[in-house]
Image: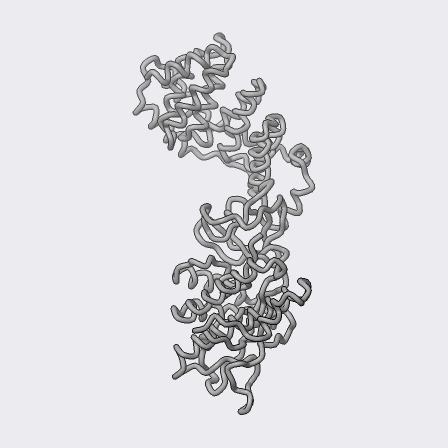
Amino acid sequence: MSVVPHTHYKNLSISENATPAQIDAAYEALMAKYSLPEYANDNEAARVREVLTISHERLSSQESRRLHDEWVALTRRKLNTDGSARQIVTAAPTGGWNATSNTRSAPERQATGSSWSIGTVVPLAGLVFTVLIFGWISKRADKTNASTTPPMQSTPPSASSQSASSAPPKSSTGNFATIATPANSPTATPLAPTAPPTLSLEFRPDLAIAAVTANVRSGPSAKSSVVRTIERAAPLQKLGVDGTFTQVRLADGMLGWVAQDLLIPHDDARRLNTLTASQYLSDRAPEKRLTTFDAAIMSGDAARQINATFASFSSPTLDMTATLTQLKELAQTRVIAPASDDAAALWYTLAATAARNSGNLDEALSNYLAAAEASPATGAHHSAVALAAYELGKRDLLLKHAYIALAVSPETTNSCLVFSLALASLSSAEQPREVAAANTLRLAIHYSRDAAFTVRYLRGLATKTTNPIVARAIATALTN
């Protein structure tokens, strides 16, 4: 197991190879967070802002960052080669060491002697080694900055105590090293490397995980390393945003980044965490939200537009240009929809995806239905219900939700796909279905952002379907 020291990078929640722009962005986001009015009279928040400023200053200067990186590298090497030193370093000593010699001090040689017990030797060796390492780096800093930066002390030094072998910094709280202004230079920024103070603040969650599980990453990218995996409803405190990722604090104080599309407000997570999809549907049943929305579609302009477009679908020679124009007009048709419960829609959609991936299609359908109930005007929820209904042989659900999907999101691959499956499920007496189903599949391919993937999906569907109309419709669509 790799052990790492506490670093200025950790205070800013950035990687050790962060660019100057990333360092500035992380600092600005955290300072903005802890400068909100709610922290105006919070002494701990003031301390956090001070720590953030110190860390930003250390990493913004090329020379001080280089010195800090050297300290980090040497401390990490010591921690990970000494089997007993399994601890996080929170204070760096300032003892002296001859940087030009590999000769160890007498106490260090004695600590490694065979007459000592291993339980006593290793911790003492680790302490002494860290003291010596810090002193070596401090001397290098002194040489670089002798004209402007005197040796750093943990407390204001007296005239008789200013030497290269000062005592290690003492903590005012017991948890982190106090970084004091160097002697004789009240406003100077010390360059000597030291273990940074540790951030701490009252945990105030305002977000939570909506997915069954979610990865916490070291940076705002899907390529950043995963530092932890957390479960559904895990509370989080929002710190900032970078692109599609949100920087968060976990309940144990750990900082990281989570994809925004996996997060909902904390209060909503507490509400939904006790409701299964069936319970949610039951609680919302008296409102008849989906029923009302469906009736509005069937009796309004959307239904007339769909019926007109169906005539184009049914033509043996599809006029693609005219049909696309009709679908665009359909997309612009507005249907009054009830207010959506966006948090619930995301909560149950992610649960449905997890259930589908695990092979539990019935559970997936139940959660898709809850998502559609939560946000009736979102076509993706209805196309997901329709596809699951098709796979489970639930014809009535397929017909109902495929129609709604096309009405609210006509210019999408999934809406055209499930509408084609719905057409293929009709009996000959109900509709001329095979030509219409094939033409609708052609539209599905046209709207796809990855046509090659859609074609592969349709070929796979053709090999699994028990409906010959679907198989022939797919073959016709792929041929044309």
